[in-house]
Image 1 (tube, one colour):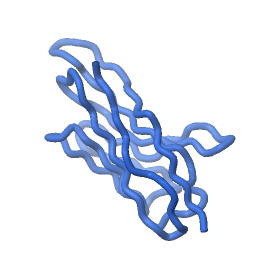
Image 2 (spheres, helix red, strand yellow):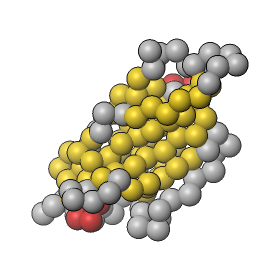
Image 3 (cartoon, rainbow, N blue to C red):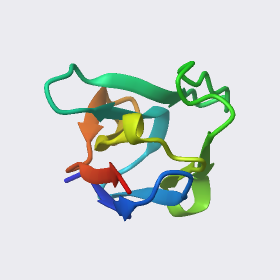
Image 4 (cartoon, rainbow, N blue to C red):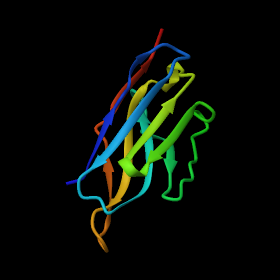
Length: 121
């Protein structure tokens, strides 16, 4: 059974920083595309920082220059470093990964449980 377990998040003042992590565990043969999403109250879920297996990241315009996506392949863990946080960044953040569980097997999308990030003075 594959799981994505998130940690981090919380309450931070505007201009502050937070780091989110997402650790994958279970039967994992290969991890392909991964990314971070967020959903603000009353808003649709938004793609924040996708990354391909080749390492290319395409940040949303709203977070460019402030957020950094990274991936530790040895630990099957991804991170989202968030700097210069704004109230508009307040949302529930989710990690996502496309994972192949066995050789020649299919790929499936998995989601983390979500982490609340609140930016407020």
